[in-house]
Length: 252
Ligand SMILES: [Zn+2]
Image 1 (cartoon, rainbow, N blue to C red):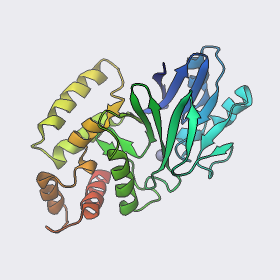
Image 2 (cartoon, rainbow, N blue to C red):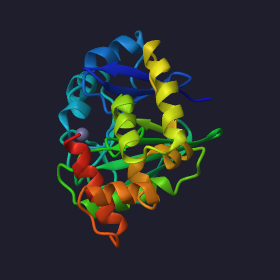
Image 3 (cartoon, helix red, strand yellow):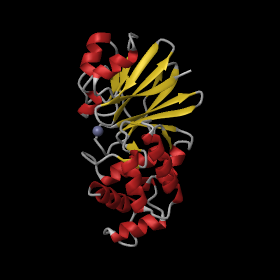
Image 4 (tube, protein in one colour):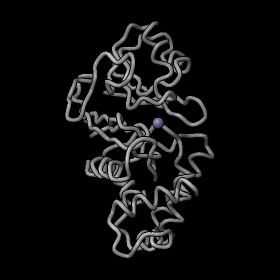
């Protein structure tokens, strides 16, 4: 039995805490202090990293110093003891964990799919967000579109653990990009109530993202029409629609 809990950090980051028995792992510890607090005296078994940004890696040195634990992640990051690349598989909490390269937000970005008894748990950092996706700091729209397509092809019941609580702002954009999509309206209402109770809107699921995330819905006629109003041609490719949505969202 694996328990997965969010450890809130900074303004809107989530450091995901995975526990099975006495084993504890964290994903993207940008800050060590909230991790140490959440461990309540337990020993950290290891660290998983999705990409090199400081709000995902800033706590690594302090945690390694205290717990002398392994660090799994992109080989580009200082302090990684187990470099991971696309297609790698390793054992995490007695389960298979699969590695996907998902360049776009950064070029070194990876996503981790943990195959548990109750389905796949996907740790996707700043690539796929609830109703959104990460900004393109290093990669091209074509790279990010391909990365998102790869994640969207996972089973619909895959649970999606994003690294930020951006859901409400993303859903507001999704409403503008596809105003007639009732699933987006319903999700906005439900997630607003969740945030009013100060609860995380995550994990999401691949099925919910396919229904409500504009960046996975470039084939929707309404989204294509909205993208056309923001500069694409009627025969635009999925990548061109994606690039237009991303640019529009950057200025939304
Ligand atoms: Zn980032």
